[in-house]
Length: 202
Image (cartoon, rainbow, N blue to C red; front, side):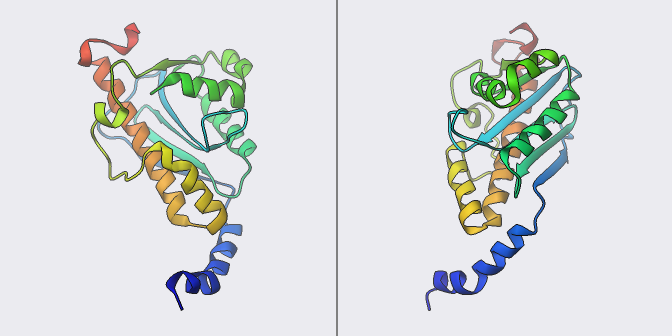
């Protein structure tokens, strides 16, 4: 018997049963000891199944605020539950600037999924960390042991849905956490005049 056939017959039913018993959402939180964002500034990164919020979905989101970093991911919950959790998180930071790499992407998704009215009522605006050429991993070359890039997220999500692959969930969480840490470090570099600019002058 081939190893994959063994998995399909013997282990896949167990994986599906375990998946059904998991909570709807999972929150993974870490302390960031190397830096702390001041009040009024947070970093946000969304992981999605594609590029178009009208047809695609949010899989997970990560936030850095102060010296905390956390990722919230869907396990058994619909996208609506994740969006409600994101709204609860964002309500803590009324009047803040949300920093993102390719902020146009995050803004488009937030307006479509969270709602422009919600953002306006809470005094939230999005600003861009991409103030120089290059990909995020080239500008802040710390991999944090992250073997993936954003293009792999839709496939990892399908693996979770179709095969109950906990390894895929771990990969999404790890990538989302690595991205928000890279973005937080980029914020600190810009704030301290790296690359010839300061984020509060953008």
